[in-house]
Amino acid sequence: MSDVLLTLVMPADLAQTVEDLLLSHPDLVAGFTANHGEGHGPLVDLQADADLVAGHAPRTTIRTLGRASDMQALLAVLRSELAGAGLFYWIVPVLERGRL
Image (cartoon, rainbow, N blue to C red):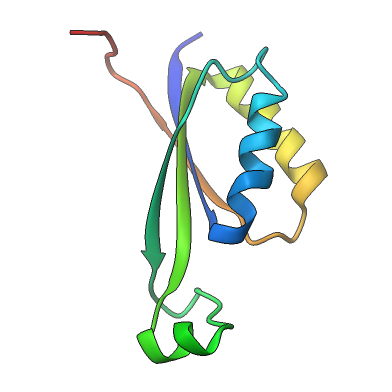
């Protein structure tokens, strides 16, 4: 089965919970990378006063690479554990991978 890249974008305060979930499933996730950023746009829920003033909210992006079936299984875990948490995701095919 081919590799895919799963990208998860979430409110920053949810990141530790998601990271813990990923780490608790080493059978599905070999590793991941997390980055901090800012969410912009009409779908971003601005709750804190500072977010309203700035016009954006803190977000964390997590990326993990693996077999398509494993990423689908991981999404099932996330759906079960974090329904309604505001987690946005997408999956794209990986054309090539390696180490240099």
